[in-house]
Every structure is written in structure tokens, then in C-alpha cells.
Length: 271
Image (tube, rainbow, N blue to C red; front, top):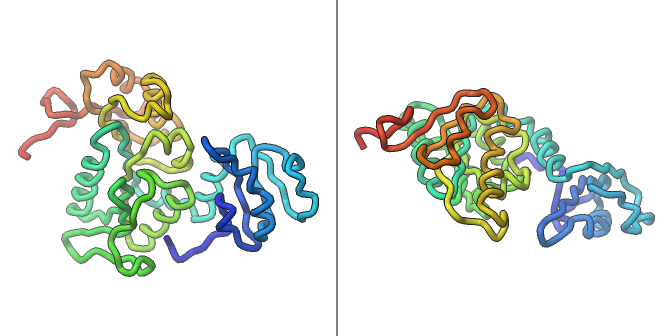
């Protein structure tokens, strides 16, 4: 990550004295169960969704902040701690069941080749430097000069994500292309990001163990395009699929479809 270390943690095992611990309620684990461990490690501020009195913590001296949505608060704190780096980058988000990685890599290459140093958030790894044809790519000093940071998730959690954006800025990037997974949307990992444009590749059956139904899966994807991104243009592909008919009317911002057909506003040519 970036050289700047912040004092916000959502993993009690990483807490240091003076840290803020945000207790996230996950599908398998409730972070509130680890508040005592975080306090024992030296946390002085706890952010959670319920009254910490329920956890018998009277022996500790700490500040308690109760919020309606700890995930949203974690994203807000992460953005603030790193200086809202996405406000200084052009962030291009790509979502969809298939094709995210291909589209993200192609778009990053186009941006780099047109003189716009561009970072990457991807399933294949994260890149915090550009690679413009006018000069060599900047290497990451904190990653043994490795170009690619291994990805644990397609879209990282907000603390890692904002740190990556900050490092991109430090390395001279003016843009970032990122894959946006449905889990990241649902779990508010991307809250607070200022997207310049958003693309929807397609929707096929996947992740139903998490989303349960195709309609629920689609609604999560759709929410990316209508929540908190008023300045982003939208470009859904696969225009013949019935679910995409709604996109031109969402949010009152520019929208266009793409694909191989010349009838699409954006289409492939001379490849």
C-alpha cells in the first residue's frame, strides 16, 4: 500500500494503540464480537451498529460511535483518511458477469497510449502506475519494485481501495480503470468513489449463492448506475437483452450502448 499508514482498522488482529476499529457485520462473522479484542490491542475508538454495552466492555476506556451502517461509515472514513483520492482521478468502473477484466485492461491500455497514466484495479492484480508509451512505467517502491499487486478480491475493501488510489496519485496517474464486482456494490466497498464513467458488460447466471435470484443480482448491478454517481456517463453493452432497456432513463445522465453492431452508439471497428 501507500507509505501513509492510517489509524482505521476493520480487522481486530491488525489494531494498534490509538486506532479506530470499525466493527463490520459480515455474512459469516460479526465484527462486533471482536470489539473486546480490538480494545485489548489498544483501540481508542469503536464504530459499530449497536450499543457496545451489550458486550461488557466497562473495563475499557474508549469512544463509542454508533452508526446505522458500519460498512458505509468505513468507506467514508477511508475516503477521508486518504484525502478523497478518487476526486483527483478519472475513475472508470466496469461491471458485469463476464468481460470485466478484458474491458478494463483494454481501456487502461488505450488511456496509457494516449498519454494518460492509468492505474488498474482488477481480478488479475492491481497496478498503481501508468505505462505511457512516452516513458517507462513508474515502479512501486513498497512492493519490491513489482508492477502488479496481487488481488485478494476483484474489488478490494475500502481501506485497501483508497490506499491504492492514493498510491496511483503519488505515482503520477491521472486515471484508474477498475473492475466493480456485485459483492463490492452490495457491501458498499465503492461508496464515495467519484466515477467518471461506468460500463456494464453483460449479465449471466452467477453468484446466486450470494444474491439468491437473478433479479436481485441485476438490481445490485443496476444500483451502481443510479446511486451516488451523478456525473458518470453510462455505457451498457449487450443492447438486445431486455434488462438493459431501462438504462437510458436512469438518473438523467448520458447513456449509450456498445457492442459489435454498427447500430450501437459505441461499436468495434478495425480490430
